[in-house]
Every structure is written in structure tokens, then in C-alpha cells.
Image (tube, rainbow, N blue to C red; front, side, top):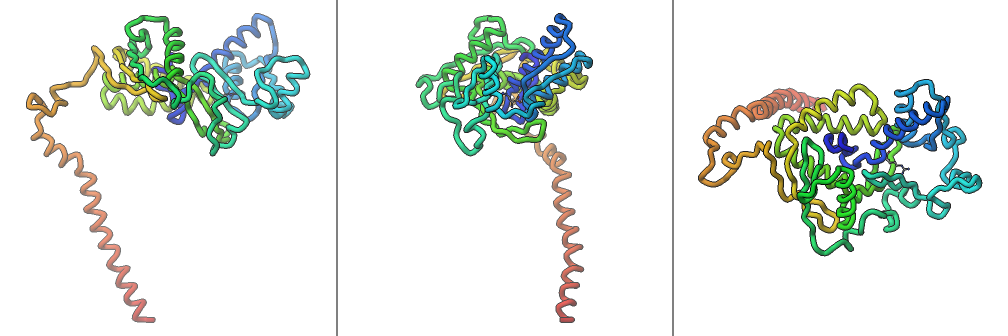
Length: 346
Ligand code: ARG
């Protein structure tokens, strides 16, 4: 989860990738156990339609290309109903039945819900799909303020209480959930090319990424921020599409890690009726300069310089507009003449 926070990881700008980031670790453990057991094959329960089959299999092969991979759901081309029936008939406990066939995946970073009525993207998700979050309209009437401290991009304290990171994430899931924060309704592009409607509950991820991004805005230059936006979205796409083990991911991590040297400070948020809004930020590495920014008489910014700056900054745009008007005039004239002579001939 730390690399995901540092990368502000939101696939297609929305999904904190709670399922996606879990797969490489599960695959690693799977390979470890397979080796302990001297197994020659491993199996997974993914269908042939999703991202997880890709994530598991690429991660397994990256670690041991000799393990055979068996995917019964995909190989037998089972529907979800057939899968549930198979599980029931063979005494395999699954948290789904034929009337309530939501597909749910969850871990500390979030809860993913698919299937059933959710497959109609025009229909509002029924209340029953949510388990971690209160409906925002029924959430507490009073807002709560939270102060989150980050050290080098990692959350280390909430409201001045230093806690182990896992505790911080648990606590933010609870507090955020109580205020209805972190409900995500996403029409998502899967790697296999299918668009799918997904619901997520990710209170801690929503809060932490919002806070982390804001702290970066306080300490990084605009050049770093703009460049990092493209690195962050590339990171999210790589990890979403199962390429956790690609060397590019390590390259991106190296850049991201370097930027986090200054991402130390606190962010204050207000949780209220489904929203987590940043209301304050501070850092010893802040490059915000109040003397430059102020509109009061104390300002040290020389406004006279702006005049020349604007001339030069806007020059290419202004020149392009002038030229395009001139060029249009040149092109339009012969066309108008041609039109006139055509009319005479008629
Ligand atoms: N679409 C998400 C992803 O690919 C979540 C998949 C969740 N799986 C599930 N069985 N609900 O990361």
C-alpha cells in the first residue's frame, strides 16, 4: 500500500486499485507455498474475463516460469451460477449464493463489488452492496477533523497519535466509513477490453491519497508535480494491468521514491457526509512563500515584471492567431473568385 500512496495510485483517476495491488503478494505467497510443497502446478479461481487472471499468471511466471497454472473457471468456461452450484455440490464454502451473487473481493485497502444488478450501469447500486460505509445522507450530522502526518510519503500519525501504518489504515477505514467517505462507482476499462461497472468502498485509500497529493503540492515544484502526474498514472496502469514485476515499475518507483524525500508534513481534513476535504497543510519542506503570494502591501513580488513576462509567454499563441487569420485571407480570396466565375458560367 505504501508504494500506492506514494504514487497517488488511482486507475483511470478513480479506483485506488485495492484488488490490483493485492495480487502480486498473493502470487508471491502462492509460489512460496508451491515450492515448500514441491508442487509442480498451482491453481486459481479467476474467470477468463477479468484482470486477476492476468495479474496472477504474470506474477507467478515472473517468479517461476516452470509452474503449471490451472484455471478451472476459465478452462471449463463456467458461469458464475455454475460456479456457485459446483461449490455447493462439492462442499466448498463460498460467501455467495444464487440469490445474492455479488462478487466481492476485500482487503485492508478496499472492498470491490461486482455482478448482479450492478451490471446495469444506469442503475444506482442498492444499499445492500455497501458494508464499510454509511450512506452519506445518513452519516453523522457533525463533521470530524483529522490531522494526518506523513514522513517521506508514508502516513505515520493520526491526530498526533503515532500508530503503526496498518493501524492508521484501519482507523481511517472506520472513521471514513462512518462519514460515508470512499464510495466509488466506476465504469472501468479492464485489460481484456471489456468495460465493466464496479463499486468500491475505499475510505482510507480515498483519504490518504487526497491528503498525500495535497502534501506533494506543498513541497514539490510545479515541474515535479506535472511530471509526476504522468509517472503516477503510468504506475497505476502498469500495476492494474498485471505488470508489477516489469522493470519499468522499479524504474518508476525509483523516481517516485526520490520525490518522497520531502513529502513530510501534516494535512488536515474534514470528513462530512461522504466527503473528505483537505482544509489545511503544512511542512518543514514547504515551498509556499507567503511574501510572494500575499495581496497585501507586504508583497515582495514585483508586479511590473509580469507585463514583459506575459508578452513573451503569450507570443507563440498570439503569433499563431495572427498568422492563421492572414493565411485564411490568402486562401479564401482565390476560392471566392473561383466561386464567382463558376456562377457567371452558370
Ligand atoms: N475490477 C477490479 C480490478 O480489476 C476489481 C476486481 C474485483 N474482483 C472481484 N471479484 N470483485 O482490480
